[in-house]
Image 1 (tube, rainbow, N blue to C red):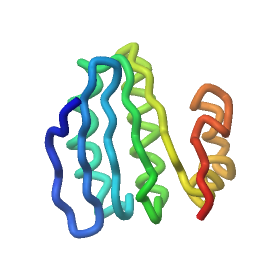
Image 2: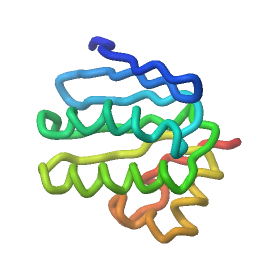
Image 3: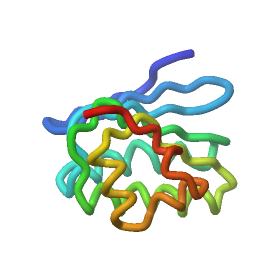
Image 4: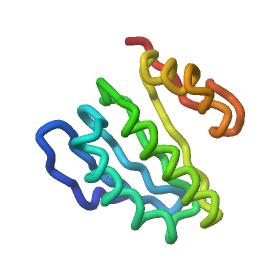
Length: 119
């Protein structure tokens, strides 16, 4: 298990952890229109070589519509590349955003797949 790459941003920190089984992107901060590009720059190159990518939202305090769109874009790209995309440890607000926008079903049709944690 090794940590590779970190994209600095005043509002979003990203750490990539690769194992033989999956690649996990640990996010810390806010995923917004001003930080979505750094998330894209980090995650998109991982998709072709990974069988499973986990976006760990444990330390994400806020996700706006741009962040939501970015994650949906990852899901579409991952599906085309036969890569499984998982979201992990979303707080209740983020989970509610996916539920209200009717996007929770894209993650295997189960809202619990988002792995909600208490606020």
